[in-house]
Image (cartoon, rainbow, N blue to C red):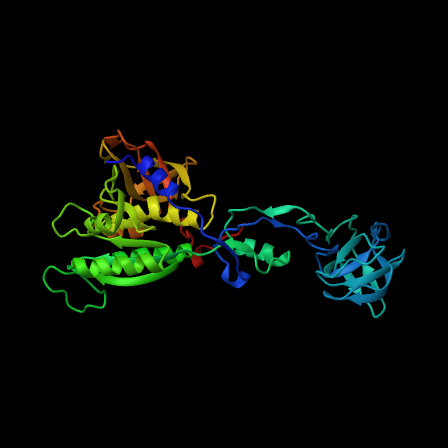
Length: 412
């Protein structure tokens, strides 16, 4: 069996970033930048008001109340035409440019307006409620770097700086299939003896769509060598990556590994990890192939350790693995001395300042409910036969779930 870190390094060494192209911002969510985002101008581009109120001289409002002459109104999107001088003010809306001469904004709630004047009721210092030009980003600053993925906020930054079509690595096209005569579609009303509904393809597809890749779903392929061979050939010719589940163990009907050797190459097919030991990686012609195991939890773990990082690298991302955090395991657990073991756990903050992890259910590779309940995978290294309650472990975070209901809204 190949050690897990070595297998991960080999997979990542074999996949290169996809070509870069300019993509409209509306289609760019989740993609990784192939060029830096450099501010072409200050952000904000001009000094503006952070409040609805009155632009004034701070010296005029040092002692209040004070009455000032109102010269004009300035709404967001318009430009002031008057100069603020001692004894005067300009009514201003949030986001509107600061008038020349003014150095502070008094919020409207601290004023009493009249038809052509305003009474200022509270003192405010120089710069109050004023957002200077470049307050967020100065012109020429590199705001986002190559390899950073475009989250919602980063899309907003690109839009604010005029990068309406950033240069990014394109989305991988991933062909997926489930294999085996025992697999039937989920819409099957009654299960015949020996049949099971296809969970793997939907678990895998959900993960891939969340990642932001293009999915080509080839459905269920039975244990028919000719049909599987033809499907592999079509998938390799039309996708950047081909992924199957099932058929990579030692059984007589485990055809995937044999066909992979016939149509391309098998780099390795057993990894010292649990679950997902029977994982095959290789190539169909020049197309990377990931042969995932047949058990649903093994599919998910193999996805996390191999397929997801490889796809992120193809997308040009610099960070490709899930975050790992230290946590305390709250129960005794037996593991496997010769493998890296991934335990499905729920995670919650403890009173001691540590994250605490508990098994989310039974740990068999067929127990999908424990995966559905898991927040993280507790990573138990090779050479560990058991983990005692209270031990510190690494938690590979799959999610940080919502933790409060609507009824639990509290004052802060």
